[in-house]
Length: 350
Ligand code: DAH
Image 1 (cartoon, rainbow, N blue to C red):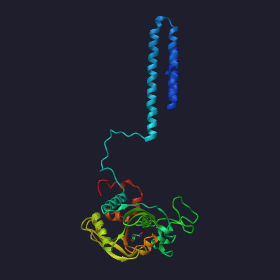
Image 2: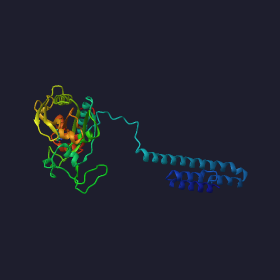
Image 3: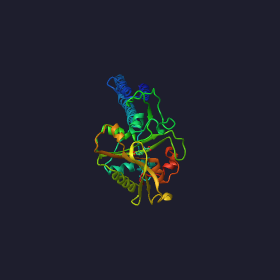
Image 4: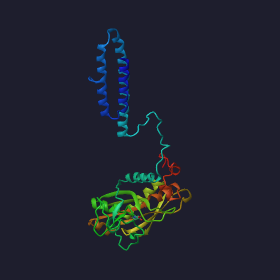
């Protein structure tokens, strides 16, 4: 009898160790511990034994059964653990000390972008994201940029080739997709979708065929702003940008605007700012932002016909702002994911 108990134990052990799923588990459990299982068969054999041997054999069977039940319990914990990891990933240890904000770092470009969104949202701007893949019409034509404009040259812009077609971005037959060279594209998409009043900010990645050096990289980030409504003037443009730079770099910062040219605004301006809080660059005028009043042709391209409607737009580079504010002298650092660089930018500081 003892040898039979040992045999049943060994069989149970082998079966349980080969179980790897819940279905295997249920089958194995009913085969071993179920009403018609092997332990039941073992119990039946007790009646063939002489009376005096039955109690000790019964105890031996029960002891073996308890061990087998424990093995099943452990197996179930293992299977459930595996199922939870498959659904939710590796477990975390909730007893570990929390990481303080002091130790978490945040990419400097994300910091600047978040700060811009915060400042502008206090002025009633909402954030709109556009597509990085655009058509020539959205990137250039709708923005009043003629075919002959140098920015459309394929040495400056990434074109996809005439035969490419991309789901969800429709294009005319004779035009090509491009990687957007400016976030100004979002002005057009927004005006085509919405009626004034509009107040949006659009941060995002842009692409240009620039050779890489300390101040150029083929991908970088811009932030575009657009305000459209009745009676919007250059005064509004200047005061909003003045407010923004004061919030970003301190109350003692100033801006000035100079006439400039961008095809999609008229008049167009370049903005310089200076601040006492810029280390080596303190109090120097720094060119930072293009802007202007939305050109009539751009309104026309978006189906805005009313004479009462006017608006302004502005656009600036996020890398450039980050380089000035944090004293970073090489744009490549933003894209290398080197923790020695990133560690300087604690989540808790601006
Ligand atoms: N899109 C321009 C660029 O990439 C920047 C710019 C200039 C945006 C003037 C504007 C603007 O909205 O009005 O250089």
